[in-house]
Length: 167
Image (cartoon, rainbow, N blue to C red; front, side, top):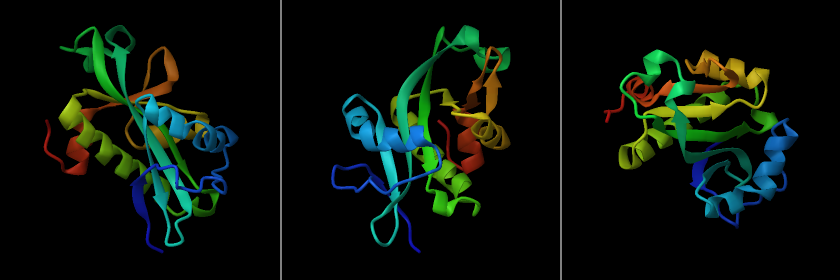
């Protein structure tokens, strides 16, 4: 099976996508195209049959310096420029094969590329549940002190892990 990542277009059939989380399924079907017009970018992963088997969405964001651990806040402005990994979902049929980690890597590569152009010190994610928190912690994201469902990682750390030049 060959998978390819594409920007979400109205021509993509989203009706059959199911990831095991109704909120993520419904957001893709009902809100993703509208969100694109509002500044969010959604990318879908399609298979050989053009079926959508995964997606992620990113958006510009800011984090208040006061909400971050001191080591992340050091030298940062009051509002730290960031990129939000707003959504990340993989079809239920592909769970358990390590593809969630591969999807995250691709999303992070996209984010680093965007940050090179637009700037950004942090990658931010709002985990939808405890399993998502564990997934992101496993990939070196750190929860914010007062909000354990919001996790961050430095853009420079991501770039280094990906072997990408930074900045």
